[in-house]
Image 1: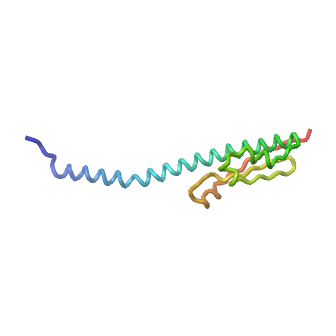
Image 2: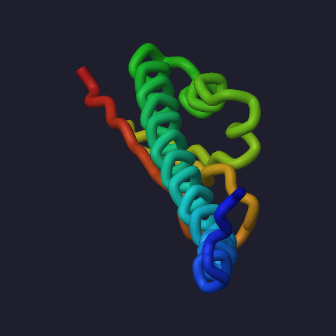
Image 3: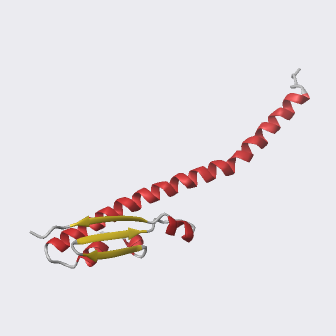
Length: 117
């Protein structure tokens, strides 16, 4: 002889499943937001390294713009802008994003300077 759960308990189990399924989009959005924040942080680190590489090239009399671009990985070079002015190298980089408008708004900039000896 098997015992069956009352009908109201069986219905509550179905409702819990529906509630969990309703939360899935919220968890997906939260996960994508966290990934976007990680991408912004990574872009910031890359921009800083590229600016420093450009400043070092400037200090030794090399091409700062070319060295800064060479310090960036392939995917990011297309999303980077390098400005060199008066001993200062500024690198602006857009992080990877599924939405181009979002990437433009999250653009990061890093700069490095070199003083004349």
